[in-house]
Amino acid sequence: MNLFEKDGEFVPDSLISGNKQGALTRGITLAPGQGVLKRGTLLSRNENNLGVIFAQSNTEGSGENVDDGAQQRVTQEKICPSGILTDDTDTGSSQEGDPVIAEEYITGVFNPNAVIASEGTNVKDLTETLRMLGIFFEEVV
Image (cartoon, rainbow, N blue to C red):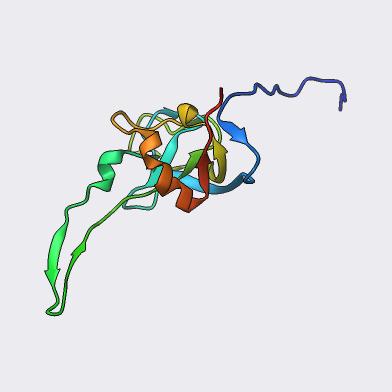
């Protein structure tokens, strides 16, 4: 073993923007066929409990009114963000492939300008939702 051999390289980015809240991670199984997901991708879980890129349009479930006699309530299927991908991960190009094991941040302080979501999703609009998960935003200047 050569103790002076270069094993890797740390290249800082602007995803993590503070240490006021510790960054915790957990494993996540990603759905196949999404291509290469970049570090900082906002994830949610699909109907099979596999990680997918979060899309704001997923939060607009079909509301249905239920009359239970005493009050009227609205039930709605809602998909919420689950975390932020820690590293670039290749999920392959075929949806028939195998799911891929990865890691996601479930708490921490992040730069909203470095978080990646699907087109049409404004990450800053999710500030309150993500705060309830323990994910906080602080812009890097």
